Image (cartoon, rainbow, N blue to C red; front, side, top):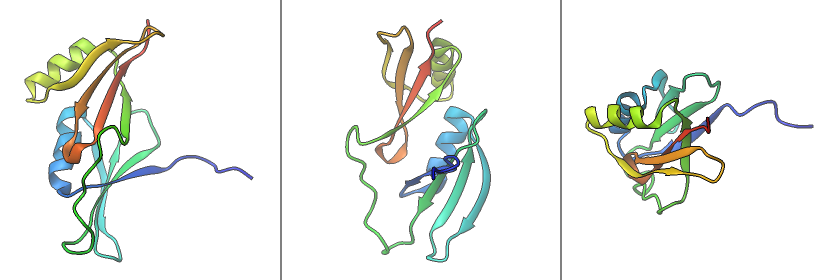
Length: 129
């Protein structure tokens, strides 16, 4: 028996609204739904263009869990972009900056990173042409 498909990935955050603004403004993701879990956590699901998988943001109620402190290079989300240079210019226009790159990989793709709230990294990948 095998699983059918990946549905979502959860990121726990300290400030769900700040994080939602980042993903909406910097990457163009869209909120699909919001609700409060039975434990009182605020949950927000974000849709990614051309993907069935969603990103679930979770903010725990005050005092229920320690604040999120993401270790360097612990994990990241990776998104494909058509033109990394143009995407970086648009990010700058919106007030966001690349934290690393662009760098050409051995396979010919271009990669760069932008820092999301809480210390999570977002990788931007332009496939080899």
